[in-house]
Structures are given as structure tokens and as C-alpha cells.
Image (cartoon, rainbow, N blue to C red; front, side):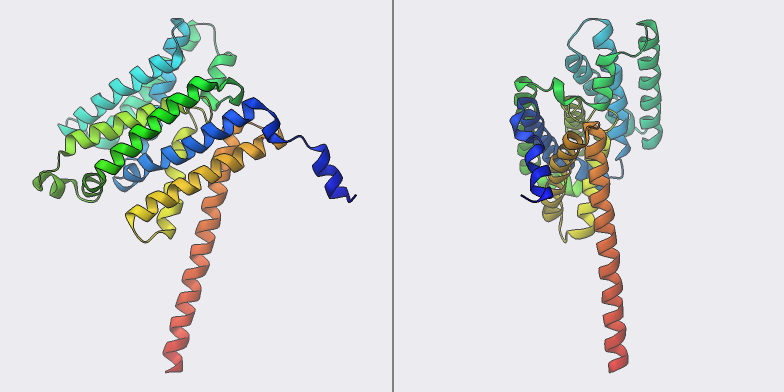
Length: 291
């Protein structure tokens, strides 16, 4: 028996543990779900809304813990209210879009910090929501994520054309009869729900990265919007499964491992795209001089 076979035999199988099986299933669903919404946020250049709603969800968790309420419920309520308020303020042009997001982000963070300080400081529950905890994932979490995934994919499938139009040119979409305000509101609320249900796996402070990074990588490779969405989902799923596996065998934080894996995939994509562009330029120059 070779040393490599001995090491492989000695290492525990990730599928031997029920909590890791649940984590892999949940991670795969979140990895597919988050970039679907992230695609349209990135194209609208409002990717910061993911970070804003993450901090609002953190505030909701803090409220839930201090009031002895199920934190995901209070987080979902907080992100839904914030999404509606942000959409209304942006639609009525009461503040610039990035200013609205910044105000909500810092306000939510300040409220969370005050609540935590009043309740006696950080504890294990707070950290599990901040950075994710695969040990806390149960069957209810998986069913909730699965239900949200059906809703999100159904929404994107039914309104794909409207989402594309509002992402590339909101004013033109509005003149074409697209209900831009309703589409934007639904997108924001679903983003908040995705962040809330992803807390157990990735954590509220890291889910924004999983919403954005796979999208950025896919846009470097895809030739159309539909293919970009599918590719982003594939990159998100790969990042989640590979990151959770690395976290298991490396004994490290799952959320951080997932995000760093997605960053690594982005670096590979960017490097490959740069090399491809250089080769294409060199080929064109060679053909020009050859003629």
C-alpha cells in the first residue's frame, strides 16, 4: 500500500457525518441560488445592496437573540422592511442610490452593536450567524432554502425578459411598459430572504461575496445573459462544495473557506481570460505581419 493510499484510508469520509451531508446539500442550493439574484444586482451596479441587507440581517439576528425570538424570523422581517424602504427611497429619488445603501448599512450595524453591548457582548450564537455554522444546519433549514430556491428560479424564469431590460436600461424598460418598481422590489426582497436563509452556512458577513463573486467570474466567460446565469450558478455550487470540503478536512471556518474558494476560482478565470486575450492579440498581429 502506497503512502498516499494509507493517508486516504486514514482520512474520514465527509459523507460519514450527517451534519456535513446537510451542509453540502444546503451549500449547493445556496451556491446556485445566490448568483441568480446577484447577476441582476451586478448588472444594475447595486451589488452593495447585498452587503447592506447582510448588515440589516445581522441587526435582525441581534434583535431576535435579545427578545428570545427565532433569529431567522426577525432577520427576514428586518431585511424585508429594509428592502421596501430602500426601494422606495431610490424610486422617489429622495437620496442617491449608493447613499441610501450606505445609510441603511451603517444604521443597521450601529443598532446591532448597541443591542449586543446591552445584552452583554458577543456569544457563540452571534458568531454562528456572523460567520456560519455547519453544525447548526437542520432539515428545516434545507426545506426553507429549497422552497426559496423554487420561488427565485420561478421568478427569474417568468420575468427573465423584464429583469434583463431593467438591468441594462431601466428608463427604456419603463417606457416599454415594464413594471420596473415592482421588479426591483421583488428582487430586493428575494435577496434579503436569500441572505437570511444563508446565515447558517456562509454567515451574514460573507454571503454578499457568494452573491457577487461567481457572477463576476461568469461574466468574463459567458457570451450571453442566460449562459452567464447558468455559469454563475455552476461556479457558486462548485465554490460551496469545494469550500465546505476544504473546511472539513482543513478544520477551518466553512463560510470563509467557501468565499476564499470562490475568490480562487475568480483569480483562475481572470488569469485564463488574460492569457486568452494575449494569445488572440498575438495571433492577430502574426496574421497581419504575415500578410
